[in-house]
Length: 221
Image (cartoon, rainbow, N blue to C red; front, top):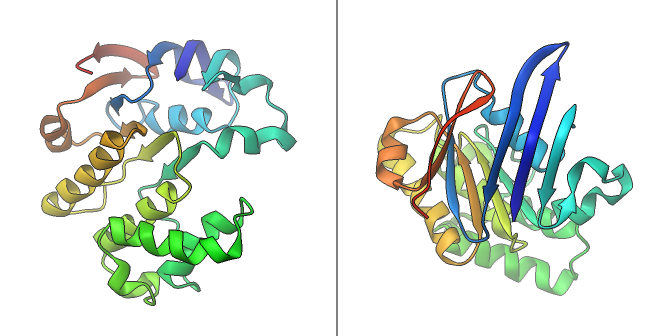
């Protein structure tokens, strides 16, 4: 599903990822962890081609990411949902419209957009707030909307970049359970976090980065 071979990435000649290699199988739940600056966010950005890399090879669902032309990126991203630490919701749209927007940009039929968006909100427990705007919600609620938006297109892969970083421990646990539910439903999850509480609670496979290198792996899935 996800294969990296000797991947190297630098910013202004400063290494961010060095000789990174691993394989994540279909249906796995894998934590990516390590201290701040270890390369977690950079790694996730390479997986959905938000950024390119200098050397090595990245294969996602059989697609050679490095050779994918800009006008073909949709072939990769249509299979990937992404959740960020800062939610990235559109403040001028209701939460239903935020989730629906993910369907609109892939050309879904109008008659199905509203229903699928509402179902996605229902699955994260927020269908009753469908007409609310992002700033009317708590941080945990906004993150649940972001998860609904990431899952509404039924992606094969769900990437999360510190999705519990701004949340209290109780809400962080709730968010983790939503990712685990998506995984049980068949989605491959790559979850970047430095939270030891989340790592202990999840007890999933783990890739540990240190100064851009793979320092350790724990395979339990």
